[in-house]
Image (cartoon, rainbow, N blue to C red):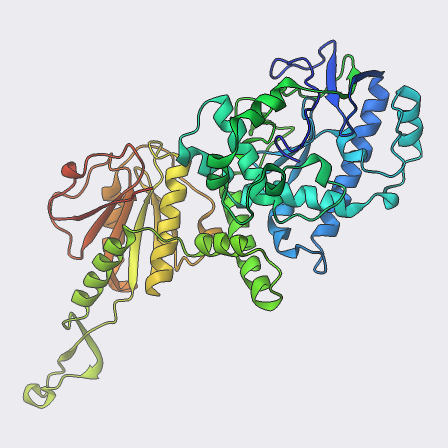
Length: 496
């Protein structure tokens, strides 16, 4: 399980410097624990075979879990995004924010009923040579994968940032709190001895990770750091990426530091992009909601998280919604255009001349200018996209998205889901005037009643008032001052 998922002190192998390949001695802990440390030397051939068999088993578990009749079919969108990465230095199984699964092959294989009790080079070789994946208790690995996917879906990495956790002790404690939030819903006898659940710490079920974080005793961390017995498998001279040994091995998916993870842009071990992860999370949220309606077997807190993803709610949004409703009302008050498709009500007075009639169009669309310049971080762009989707859902309004840095690079019409805007283009200079002017050119055809700009504010803006209301949403903790925005525009500060 990701993070400190054991209930007893576990062996603490020698700390390994990050990003080292082929070091002379690498230590890998096995799940089964003993009072004393048992050190076993193995060859690279056995290690390679162990990774091969463990990877085969993990892929089978993922495929089994994605079936419609599996216990958790709603996790299929996120599960299909997972990439299994062979690394040294992970005690159990861990996930990072890029949907990569790090795994210890001996931990994965140790749940097989024929895994050797007395571990040595020969017993491991014999076990791996005769390995039959059909004998594996697949329900165990399903619960492990469910645990890792829930770290992603519950956004533990973002929630730790909101708490401002920085020190190793704080992050290790948060990782345990995240495990408690997930494990209270897991029922698996094989995993009970090695995973944290609230009742083992004398804590109640039904709390959030933030609440568990406040209640976890500090003595627990000290006990885990003291170490204990177990089996340590050593191998010399390998070619696998190496992670440094940490107590909080849960990965950034569980909210711990990113410094020991592999480069997300590594060609051989590339992770999923933030847009891909967010898109799959949205689809997972939809499936959770549907599954809860039809079968009612989804934990209540997962349903709540799904609803928050599909319908993000923030207090300041009431202000934005009010401004949009006001703009919509003002746009509908009078007739604004001419048409020959219907007769003028004073047609007889102008004969033989044909006079166009005045018409009033229904203004039900909003142009949103998304700042995709280099000054906007991906997290700020993600926040802006969430608010764009909130505008579309709350007011049943057609929303067009103009992706703009110093020029408009892409226009997406009638945005309703994150998958439509998951590919971000731009990342250059900043000039929101270009996006605003482009939207004004199309306002008659698209029936815009307002323009909403989502930006950090470090951009020029039109000097003169626009023909339709301009609403500027300042995104990010370090956005430009509200006082520097145009006085005639409506300005909303998007808060966390």
